[in-house]
Length: 131
Image (cartoon, rainbow, N blue to C red; front, side, top):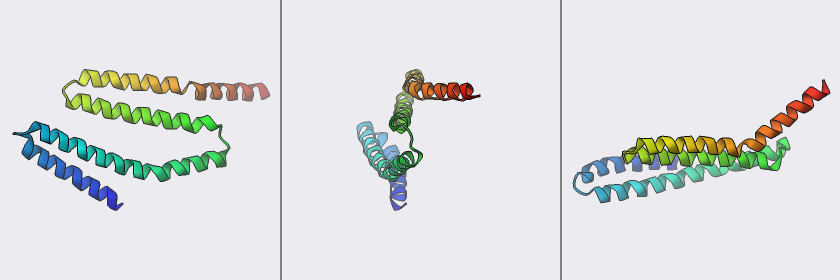
């Protein structure tokens, strides 16, 4: 949890410094923001490692099909990347491009989820056939 507090403090400090420096040197302010975003991203990844290990353990315990968890993790990744890209577009003053990226991300997740929907359909057909 100590990493969380350090990352949050660094982000707040970057906002304050970026505001003070940004009036004269916008390039330095932007580089500061990118550097802190990278640092916070590495903290996020360090927190996700135990979560992913737990999810793989659940997959083994639940005897899930090997691709199901992979599809869900890919969908999560697409959602996160889409959300971050849309924020960047909005910050750059191009909210319409960000909205289109969000729509693209939603459709990509639906496309990626087709095998899961097919599995549900097969399961429903088996259940209805057994009645």
